[in-house]
Image (spheres, rainbow, N blue to C red):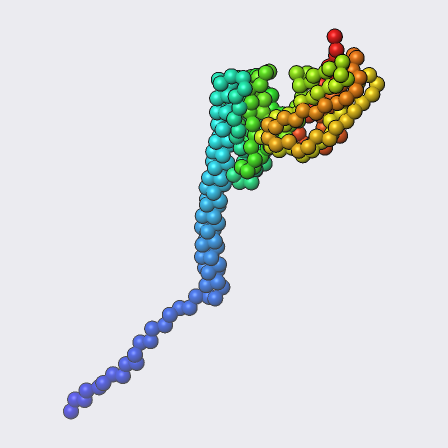
Length: 249
């Protein structure tokens, strides 16, 4: 009798080889480092592009401001004596830069940080006394007797020899003071000295371009020296036109 033997076979168990924990940690650190490196590269590229865009914006701001000054200078230089115009300058450049404006001969320079922008004007006969910054204030460019004159947002008390009339027979001296500016002026003291004596008068506040005639009484035989704003109470765009000396002939 043949017997059939049934072989008992145990099932094959699949086993997976485990990686060491140190290797897993190393791979994780490498992956994080790679991601961080990519992130830093992206950030640096973005920062570089942002800085480049900011620099371009600042340069455009400088060019726009320079063209404003240049256009006003060229326009008034072509109009002739007596003409004037106003222009405003920003308080600061785009990006928060402070700046300086300089005009030498016919060259206009704008300086900010370590950068300089240069352009040429149509005339070299120009004097800049001061410049005000801020879009709420104005600078004036005037074609005067001696060329173009630029003044800032301040009053300017002015007098010259033509503003003084001396009457020695009546011991009277009449002086006309003018606020030659687009900004009002506070009151101030006017003083006249002549023949060893002096007289003073308090001048009321003057509106823009307003004139005021004051009369000094006293003997005048040789000369009369007159000061406007004698105590320097007024902060002016031009301080050098506050005095005049008239010699009688």
